[in-house]
Length: 455
Image 1: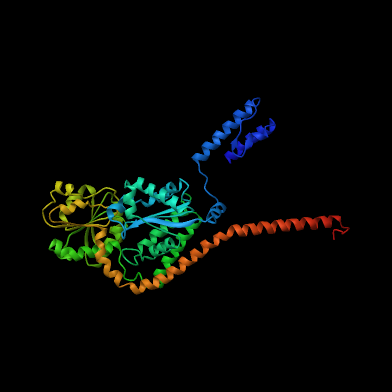
Image 2: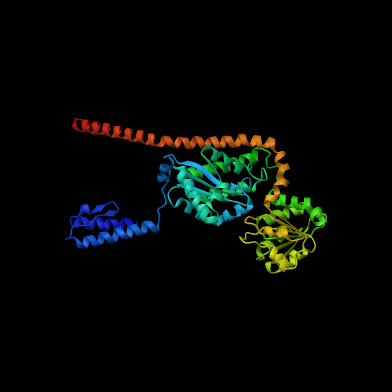
């Protein structure tokens, strides 16, 4: 509104001084030498308009987004997952959920990418986007990811995958349905895709009409798969797989039955809550939680009154590690919490056996911890062997799930293809309106020349 008022004021000055030719949209031409006042005013307004347009980019209207969608925007996905890249690479690209929209906005800022949405989890990092020129868009994204991660473009290309069109749609459907997960049928990925869709349609989001529709369809597909097939029955999560791994190797690594191991968890988020549930299901009732604050651990104490949860702050971290047999790490820290150097400094190297199970991305446990005598360190990539049998037992359910996912994918693809007809429909409507106006004018003239009464 402010820009409109400034523009109107400048236009009025131009009219008063007979300089109507001095205005051209938002670009202003210099007035005649005798119109110094007008020239100064117009230049000031032009400068302010240009500055404000740069500082406050206008959000596209629904009509503009629809128009863009009908101009041949194709959907794509670029990213990496536990299937294609190691945790060392994935953690460098990981983006906290609170920054998903900011990253999407940066990706769209150059103009090569029209719509974008980020999905970043412990097992995958993916950018879904819509663009009319896939080559330019991919180059833009690769440069952005290289700059953000600190990895070279050549290293990125060795790890990234890129899918377009129907392949990109099908990939998202499989992701949402849990078929592309390390744990087939796990439910956490569906809630993460829901959040991706939710952020894409926020005021600060960059989803647009095409991408937000695709994400919405994928959420619907994920819900159908879990309600209409048995894909999620008895399925396990990353947390339960971590418990299973530690149970599997407890005797070998610690010379101790899992049921007798002293347990500690560093962090108090969603993963910790799931860890407690799965540990309790195996009869383990004594767990120490180490966290930076007391709020969440105390809430877990109230939620699980049948479990003896001891709460410690990070100041007591090394005392807890020294008294534990198995330590699970699940914090949101971007730095290592446990390293070889820290273990040695706290006299935890070469003593009694210790198992470290890191289910965080970025990792909480440094790779060098494997060099410490009597310390066994595992991360999310080590869970593959544990869950291989889970995939084998779900082959039948996966086939049924794929039929449902294909229905939802085809539904979106059909809608997307229909957008190409919008310009033709608009031209037909314009032609029909012009014909109607012409006929109405003819009828009005005939009625005006007739002697008909008002009746």
